[in-house]
View 1 (tube, rainbow, N blue to C red):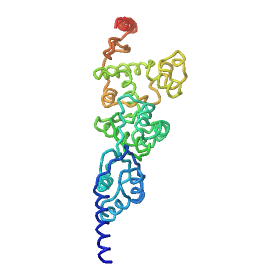
View 2: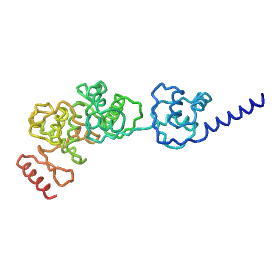
View 3: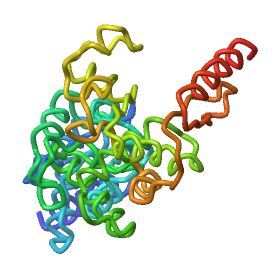
View 4: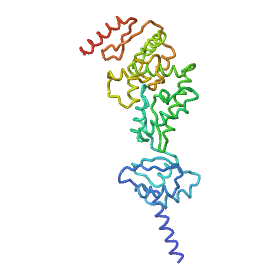
Amino acid sequence: MPRFLALLLIVLIVWLAWATLTPVTPATPQVLLFPAGSSSRTMAASLEKSGIIRSRFSFELLHALLPKKKLKAGEYNFTKSASAYDVFLRIARGDVMLHTVVVPEGYNIFEIADAVQAAGLGTHEDFLKVAQHDVALVKNIDPQAQSLEGYLFPDTYEFSRPITMHDIAARMVRRFQHEAQQAGLAGDVHRTVTLASIVEKETAAPDERAEVAGVYANRLAKNMALAADPTVVYAAMLRGNYRGAIYQSDLQSDSPYNTYRKPGLPPGPIANPGAAALQAAMNPAKHNYLFFVAAGDGSGHHRFSATFEQHEKNVVAYRKAVKDR
């Protein structure tokens, strides 16, 4: 009997070594999400069922033998051959799957919501709810904020699941706060960010941002309508009927964001400006320009003018340039 037990023990040890240390290759790539609070037993069962480890028993034994290594919740992507021991160490390290969300300068909350959904982190609608209503995130920097628009700083972000839409937005707001502090943003933050968002949408040419900001500063000083097309587009997006171009009905809309009809700045930002646009809004160029129109040569630059007569000539030049391209 003792000999039989000894043989059985040897077989068990060999089997455990085989089940624990011999690599397994998943039949197909597997993505497993372990919610917060998942037990080692739950993880082991999922790993075995998905063909990532040979035996849940060997995985749980590792957890019992290595109690200081805490298994971390999160989303894991298993594609390569690995032993149960390797898988255990990976989960203990928290080597989770990351989802990249790219927010270019000038993206608005609708476009960011699309990017979050495309990254597989949640739905467009769920992110939009947070972006439109969770203003407590920015009340310390802009008590007038009606949404998070303007304060979701453009950058490349990496998030791991599970994560809430609130946490995604909060990280973007923290990035804005850091950049704003670096830029020395102070005073009427609401006004500055609103102007910066319009500047960001009007020109992609870095050397023109201060010039464009100067045009709007001059118009505001003269109580002239800003007549900024991007604000009209944003008004249509808020109504949910933007059709890819500006129509006469859009120009006639009674939206407070329609700067063709409503004087002064719109109620809030229309997009999320980058650092350069914020700097331009804080330090508009000093000049006498009141108008600008695209150069039409594909460079992204504009022609500026101080009089409407010169502006009309620039519009003619723009149309000719577009026609000749």
